[in-house]
Amino acid sequence: MRLPSLIALSLVLVPVTALAAHLFAGWMRRASLGIHVREYGPNLHEKKGGTPTMGGVVIAALWGVTLGLIRLFGPLTTEAAFVFVAGLSFGAIGLLDDLISLGLRRSLGLRPWQNLLLGSAVSAALFLGFSALLQVPLRVPFSAVTLSLSSIPNFFLAWLVFLCTTNSMNLTDGLDGLASGVSILILAGFLVISPGAGLASALLPLGAILIGFLWVNGHPARLFLGNVGSFFLGGVIGACALVSGTAFLLPLLAGLLVLEGGSVVLQVASFRLTGQRVFKIAPLHHHFERAEGIDYPHFLPAVEWPEPKVTLRLWIVQGLFVGLAILAARL
Image (cartoon, rainbow, N blue to C red; front, side, top):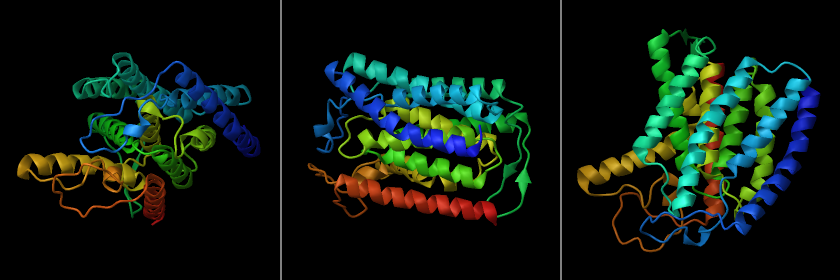
């Protein structure tokens, strides 16, 4: 499909997604299918209990239909197909997690070891199914150097990238609109850094779908991504990095995901080693929120911002990371 037609299709997808997400949220609410808020200790998001979830189903379904339409008017690149399959595969793990959580009426679905096992299995299957596609030179940030890895190191790189992006995106999805907005910025960064990677036909429509989804996912959210959505987006981002040879650039391009995941690791390590917390609450975005019941010490000074301000400022931070990644790719 030609670029003007692709842009026109993407523009249409914005209101279509907003309407579809609105209808899906209404159906979920009538069916009494909403999230169960995790007990953090401090009072933080109790008011969000019961909000419809699994909005990632809408995103994945619309994206799949769109790619099918694009395929009718011309070939779909193998890279785009790989990114879609990766997103769908990891989204299936998130969907299972959501269904268990809703079925058992608890915040926790899959156990961490089950999540790791399923994620590793999907990573292995994707690598074996698309191994030739993933043998691309890896770009080294801030240089013109590229590296080519043999099969075994390349497999472990793919495994690490997928597990990091999916779980970090899952941690980032804790504020209204945060993960959706961050994903839009990261996908835009891929289009600028790797315009010849064959991803435009997939990422332009997905970006438009995410913009439309923000219509109902922005504060106050009427529909959450759910684990199906966060794992889906994490799988897409990981696949984009692998197929475009930008895996080494990914820590910059997805810098906020690194901060979110790293904050949890740092919080757990600090508490186990010293008995002291670094953040008021981890992941990082919760540290900046207003919360009640904080009766324990923490190293970093307390911050009390309203949720929309936290989301907006973290979007800005992610935008800076995208700019840095573009600079690292150009030098």
